[in-house]
Image (tube, rainbow, N blue to C red; front, top):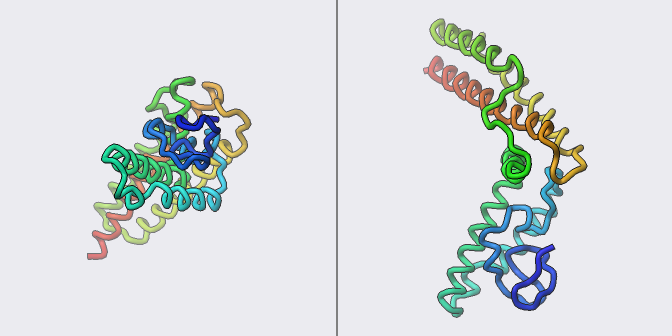
Length: 206
């Protein structure tokens, strides 16, 4: 638990001290979990997170520092920006998982481009199928392919999210991190295929 740089009391947020009402300059580099006083875990209470966000946003808002020194105003702006970045990341399931990998990476390095065994070959085959459907302008087949991609994506996301929720350690081992990184990489491939499939369907509607 970090301590206030002014009154030395423990902080509930790395950005601001509720005891002495002082901004914390160290919060500019605080990790997104520390911003909300949370351990680096995937499983978060989104309602509590949102409540904390609004409470901190009110305390840090630059309008409340209009008569403060220029340094305090700049600090308020910087901490507000950090708060918004943390909120946008942690409230999104995929972004939260990706950020956790960044937090863990220094202790458990992984190969960032790793993919599950056989996944890339399967994606190449699916890409070829999609190109053929594009040329044929077969809307029904494209809709079926889109549903298939979406189901694959949902299954993948459910799998890695459950793994992260069930994780007991704050810093998992290399094998676990590698598995999660592979699934996040696979997710990006599937999202690109979904986007291509959707844009293709739109083009055929014109």
